[in-house]
Length: 489
View (cartoon, rainbow, N blue to C red):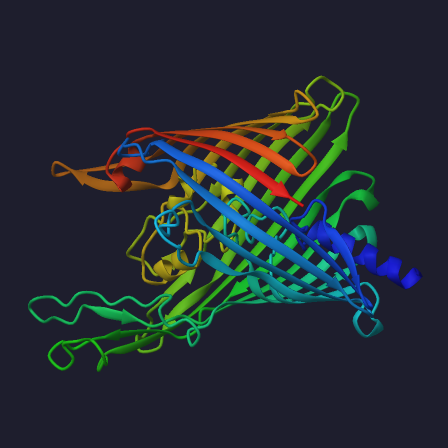
C-alpha cells in the first residue's frame, strides 16, 4: 500500500510540473485480470469565422474544425503504465463526406508511451518513453499547443526526479525529424532558370534532435507562493544537405549531380523563469521575470569562415494581482515581452531569438499575428540557417480576467506590438522603415455547461500599422470570431 501511494504521489508531482494532465475529466474504469484499464477522451468542435482578414480586409467562409481524441490508460504491475491516445482531426465537409462515402480524415497517434514509476527500485524517479505531450513550465519554449486541433506531441524519452516540494529535475530527449523517415518533409526543388543557371537547389531532409535539461520547483519551502524554472535546450539539425542541380545533365531533376554543400547547426537556449506570489490582506501579488539567451552556430563544411553565429535573446517582465475576496474574483496582469530581431543582413550573426517549440498562442496574442515576426518553429530554424532575418517583437499587454459566476469566466487582453528592428521597404522609389506592428484586442468567455462540457466564445481584433503593411502589403484591420464546444469524459 505504501509503495502504491508513493507511486501515485510521484506521478502527481511530476504532472504538476512537466507531464501534462490527461484530457479526460472523468473516465470509465474496468478490471482486466491484474490490469486496470481507464478509458477517457475528448470531443471538440469549433466554428471559426474570419470576418475580415488582416491586411486585405477580405472576409472568409466560416469553417468548423473538430478533434476526436481517445485516451486509454492501462495500469500494470510494478509501477508500469501504458498510455495510448489516438485522435482524428479535420474540418466539416473537407472530404466530401456528404456527397459520398467519405475518405480518411487526419487520423494518427497523438500519444503512445510507457510510464515507469520508481524503476528498478530507484525512489522518486519516473521514466516516460514514447510519443508524449511535453509542456515545459509555462510553455514559453516547449508546449503542446492545445489550441491547435492536432496539438503537438514529441517522440522521445523523459527522465524525471521529484524532490518533494522543492521541485522536479527532468531530462528529455526528442527526435523532431528523421530525414531517412520523412524524405518529403523539408524537400524543395526550385524552378530552373531559362538561361540554365545553377541557382536552383534541392534541400534534403534534416535530422533534428532536441535535448532538454530542466529544474522546476515551487517557492513553498521558502514560505511564499509561485514557481521557478531553469531550463537548457539544445537542438542540432545535423548535416543539412543543399545540392545544386545542373539542368544540362539532369533536365528532369531526378538525380542531382553537382554542388553539394553541408552545414552543421547547433543552437543552445538557456532560460530562467521566476514567478513569486505574495499574499496580502487585499490581493495576491504576482511578479513575473523571465529571460533567455541563445548561442551556437551553423557552419558550412565547404566554405572557409562561412556560416552563422546565433545570439538571440528574450525577456519578459510583469506584475499582477488577483482579488479573491471581492465580487467576480478579478485578476489583472501587466506584461512586457521582448523577442530580439536581426536588422543586419551583412554580418554572420543571427541576433533574432528562435522560440524553439512554444505554445505561442498563449502569450503573443491569440490572433497569432506577432508570431510572424518571430522565428518560431522548425521551419523558422531552417530559414534562419538560410540567412532569412526576423525583425523580432516587443509586446506590451494587459490581461484582465473575472468570474461573474461559478460557471462563467471572462478574459480581456489588449496587446501593442512593435518590432525590435525596423522593417524596411521601398514605396514609389523611396526607402521607408517603421517598427510599429499594430494593436490587438482579445476577448473570450468560457461557460462550464456541465462537469464534462465547456462552452467557449472569442473575438480577436487586429489593427495593423506600417511595419505590418511593409511586410504583408496592406493594413486593413482583421476580425476573427469563434465558438467552441469542448466535451471531456
